[in-house]
Length: 175
Ligand SMILES: [Mg+2]
Image (cartoon, rainbow, N blue to C red; front, side):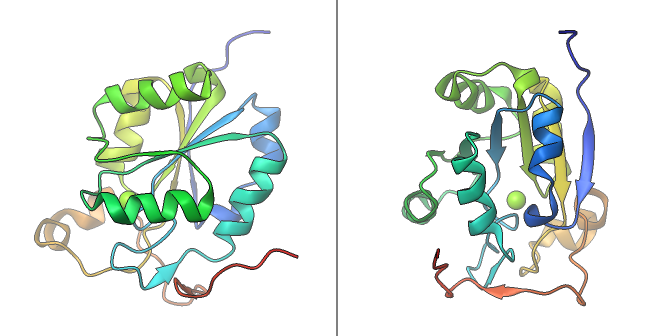
């Protein structure tokens, strides 16, 4: 099979990504960002249906790995355990070392892996430097850092206010 070219797509939120489409594109592994992608960095909002989406992806045989630049390791460990997805933090994205470690752990090559994250300068740039494809999702609402007030609009897609949001406290119960 011919090697497919890497690509960058956009989606509003994780749960709107069609896994069947990923499969058709030969994707077997998903490197996913945590902060403002799955959960807001202040732990207020959860990306709607994201836990179900991740569990369904695991059932379908996708290998997942969390790469977080977050420095609060206990928090990344919590979400890693809650989602049952191995994690590495701080990942120092966009530098490719952690992407390579994630791919080695998943035993996959770059053309088999998609990166899902909300920030251009970490997730999208990291995917480019690692030759993986990428889907940039809208950033969950979060208190802006000083640089985000200036540069945020260039590197992130704002989460539309009209979009449904979930509280991070609502533990997902699977039928
Ligand atoms: Mg993020």
